[in-house]
Image (tube, rainbow, N blue to C red):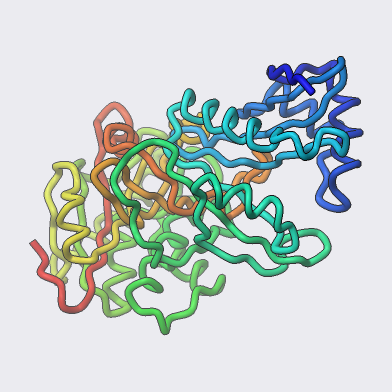
Length: 369
């Protein structure tokens, strides 16, 4: 059977839907999903055509601003099986991901799908995680990953993940992850997420609830017994210009002044205004909460806290506590997101005043410089 490979079109949706229903009993994409993937999603939907009918497809999703792709689904029609179509679609999916400057491709597969597991392992994918109760029928999932571009060895996965439960609690969520990584006996609970926000919030933002300042997060970590470093490149209350009400601006000044008084009498180390020394973070096993511009990830011009979970010669690996379900992402897609060093430097410099802000938590025996 001779196959023609091309990108899917809206006219393929009916055949894609029929193929989906033939190949999968649960967790199926519906017609609206396919329409989205073809016309609007940050994705690549490849199809294989034979005798004017679809014989298979491969769907790769991309995470904006990162070097990460996700093989969301791969399906082969019954009549096309046994002809290495899965191998061909997988190779083309990898090529598509490389063309989008991805360095990693990740996927999930059911443990009771040995043929798919053999395909992935034969092509160099390695098992790195197991997720219980993943599929709609409560079956677990095996997570595989392949580095599809030749870079250094990736970082070990030792930092737990916590997804923020409120729109404005990215900072507390990152702090929970960092504290848990340094003190594994700690729990990550929503009540502490909210408490951390209460302690660290700047009270007001342009709209909605206030976010957390680096000073407030540093003090919250210090109160819980951690050795803390603080980087803030801009003096005074942050984001004051985005608040129109002078009464609210005055409250923000008062909060900032109180944070500053507490910090002056504390053992929090001030790390200067230059870019973070990532090599030192790695050597000291420290973890950094970094304020970034979320524009590079979501096209939303808002300050956002992420956690640097590791780095190597090629990438900085981020835990993003914000899970955007509308983009077909789950919490696992927001863990160890590889971002090039150049992209990280760009996203961690916020606004017209080039704000750099970070809160670093050190292990008890680390040398803080």
